[in-house]
Image 1: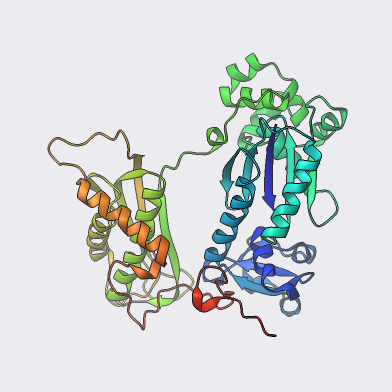
Image 2: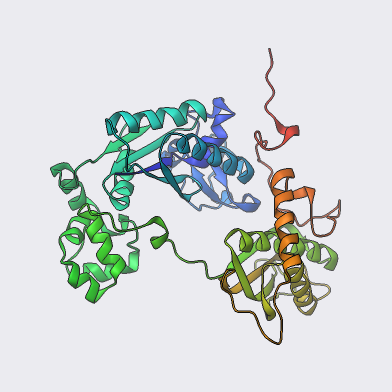
Length: 419
């Protein structure tokens, strides 16, 4: 048996955890630079605020009735880790799937699964304070659908148990479920399946495996087997391999100063390098783009430049060196820029990568330096070690006018209790 646990309205729930007064209030979390809504409470959804709606399009009457918060990823990431710690102490194995979702491997656990599921939900609520939904079923695909079913149940926290893949209740639910709601079936694939008369999850489950293998892929055939109750998919099999990395951000206001653009680019190279090393990957190509605001009058520019690295690398110093050379070729004096970004492409696994006979490879000393770099920044914060100094008057950092404190990761922002 497998379970999928999902934190309900995760970003909003994190904000409410330290501000109980937000409970029952329409709350939204905003994207970088406070541009648009990326997370909504149920109350905000009821007002008709859609996902991705720009803030300036929210009617002024509604704007006065709702609460908006800037993204606080330091807080969200820490609370996600705490949820995983609570679960890891109670189940044999867990597989984090996203910041707010986690698969649980329940093989070898005896006893009543209904009692177990409800105890896991209560443990997360009690020890972390976040509401969650939980689905348990014989396969990962069915567990994800059970979690979806649980979210539709009334109550603060929801739980759904499907111990038998052939149960009538499950069959009825699959007949009503559109294909694109099935894990691993995207919109394009759903259209192709529908052209063969496979237009719901139950129809996919009943389609002969040989036909699915011949017309589509082995993954689709395995998905159908999972819907029939036979576990044959691992979580990583449906994850799309990372092919590139993009680190960019619109500026808080337009910038034409070369030094500030260079400062912002260093920051993005640091983040890109961290992502490479976290995924145990190397990049062979790097690109930089600069863009003006197309809605403003004045000179316009939207260009990018690429270069191949001498050899695949995840060294932040090397990435920044090549990125800064590209920026020097892109930048034009007198033009006010709105956005800058760095892109890494032609990614390959770090282990097993082929070194170049003539161009060399990353020295072991540099790899050790980057590992120490990551360890220091993880332990003491990203501002503890940076590539160059940030200017005090920098205008490129993003707007976060409504950010809540980092209650759990910064000493100077710990919650204060009045007696």
